Each structure stands twice: as C-alpha cells, then as structure tokens.
Length: 124
Image (cartoon, rainbow, N blue to C red; front, top):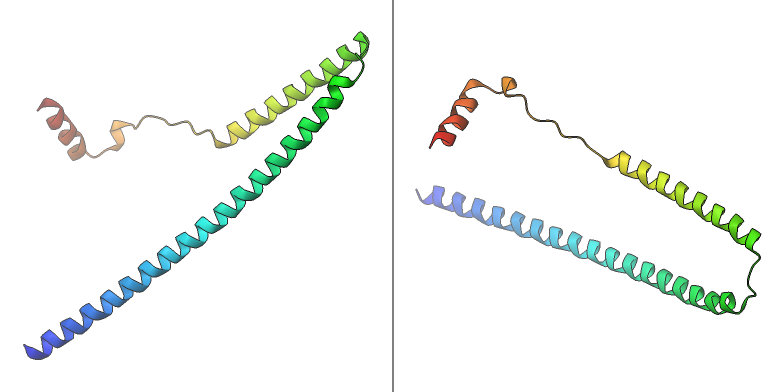
C-alpha cells in the first residue's frame, strides 16, 4: 500500500506538471495570436486613416473643379454603373463560394431506436 501511494502521488504530480505546461503553452499561443491580431488591426487602421485623409484632400480639389459637360457626365455614369455591376458580380461569386444548402435528414436513415426515443419524448 505504501509503494502504491508513492506511485500514485508521483503520477499525480507528473500529470499536474503536464497540465501546467499545456496551460502555459495555450496561454502563450493565445497571447501571441492576440498580439498579431492587434498589430494587424493597427496597420489596417493606419491604412484607412491615411486613405481617408487623402480622400478628404481630393474633395477640395473636386469642389473647386469646373462643372463637367453633360456628355462627359453621362459617359462617367455608365462607367460607374458598369463598375458597380462588376463589384456586385464579384460579391455574388464570393457569396456563392461560401453558401451551403442544408437539406433535412431523411428519417429512413436513422435507426429505429432513435425514432422511438424522439416519439417517446414528443408524447411526454
């Protein structure tokens, strides 16, 4: 009995150490992932703020620009419409890539025991 208790205590100690190392590794990995995500968000935020600043700078130039001729405006509207259509098509293709149609489960594929359990629960 004494030797058995020593082995059990040793096995318990080793298991605790493995669990501790595993937890440290998990939290280390999570910490690394969080740092990477934080830096990625900071980079994107910097890009967006820079693009916003550049866009705001161009706004003043667009306001000061002379009015365009109607023929040129209609041509640009056509280009904008074509660009929007291509963006919409691209978005639809992206959405179709991730779309999954779920179909109902055929009860004939289930074992009879499972059907009996669901009927018994429904009746209760």
